[in-house]
Length: 357
Image (cartoon, rainbow, N blue to C red; front, side, top):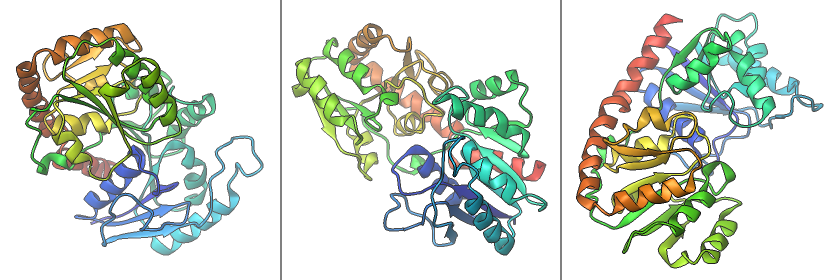
């Protein structure tokens, strides 16, 4: 049994990184002593995901200065606070959630015999230039950098980065009953933000020939009103149902027969894995970096040239016209997800890493 500490910025957002931080901590706590340290003050009532009682939660009660050049960028106070917690808790391994936080965890662990694993959820080139610089530098200062896809690993290796390990995300939805794929509902899930490409999805839906089908977009975010207006302007508001983020996402999967991803870029797309685990075939832009690794094109889903709205509309029209073929693809999707993305499969990869460093 090891003592493992996860270090994250916050757990109050309903987003993939926060969700996987809690999921990983909960899973590891079945075998190890696990704690989560957040920069922002942790409040269980504000955390959208359930942290197990045997996972210890601690916080710095501070904030994180993301800018490399801001006065607070050195985060000296955060470094001192984290070191104080580490000296008290004495973990064997720290998992630094997202490479920008390496600026805090590395100096906080200096001189201590504690292994530091950076856990990066996004492509090397995704986001800002400053973010890419942090990602490129991080592997040189930690014991191992965990990325989510083989494509991500190749990008790091091409930059001569050392100590790269691929471990995908997992989903515990394998215990849930899958969708019957009977309803004429195609589902999209995510924040209303430029990255998610809902503007392109709405444009594609306006060109899609799918009588009786409804596009259901589940998520909140700053761009939601703009996307709703776009649907009205294109005359498809009556064919799209916009819903806010929900903790009952399993029911959204169960009520759908297909899943669509329109993102401009992603890390390992957890929602694609969840959709497959729930027996939904997936239609996705072939965006960097993970849809190609998750979807077996033509078997359990279909890939579309990234950003090509017309091709997305063509694919939607073709695939939604054959409901029985969708059901068959959904069966294959669930089978593959169970084999590659179950908690048991991914836990063994983490355990092997802990033993190796």
